[in-house]
Length: 340
Image (cartoon, rainbow, N blue to C red):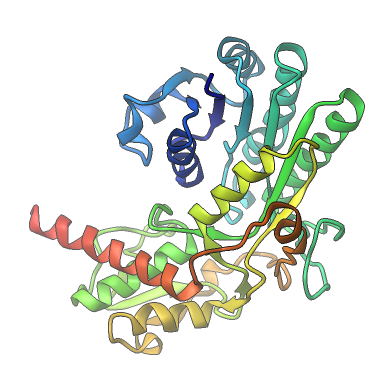
């Protein structure tokens, strides 16, 4: 009999990739989503006839309890999140509800309705915050510098408490930045891919707008924040595969998932614009209004445990990932202009 999985956040980048992966592996997949989110276009729209959907709000304990009780899943992947660290400054309470308290409500639902289920909790490298260690692993202390990261730390610690106190099989993946063609435009890497695609197509004023309400590309230039930030960026489908591997472990435990590489935003821009034959320095500038109040330190994974115990390795390089993202944005923009 096939295994049954419940995915919160199924409409997002990670949720849609995970649903596809599990379906390929013969799982029965149940998604948990708000009704209004499911019925508008999203990344899992093409899977509508292959998955079951339970409607509800992740912040409502009764909704998630009903989903766990009705679905009776073998595996649960909690990917629902307010996923923008920068936005958490303007929405700290909502961020705590979605990223922190909602996870605890899920753990309670599992404890009372499906205590044998394996649970994957989506933790984040943002939790390491202002760490001064060159690389971070499962034992690195957390030092959050945003409401988003603080809420994730709370949920991560509560996952450990429920695992130890009630014997629940909750594992956490401390995932470093992972991107793809499915990243929404408000994410940094996708903005750069979009900007490069516009430059390659000769688009001077972009049709899409940034968080300041301005065109993402205006006057042929892309506005970004701190160009010196450096991150360990990997490809989302690789990281989703790691989620499945983590959830498949007999003993629940935590894993750091990252490439172990490090790239600055300047390098990201250089690669993206070079792929369309343009010099990024002519097309990108730093806007102080887009700089976070506090920036994390150098966040770089030490994924040794994942390599040794899961046999997990990334399969797509940073350069290849950025190239795919730029190509996808160029195709989208070309299609949009052809339809006008």
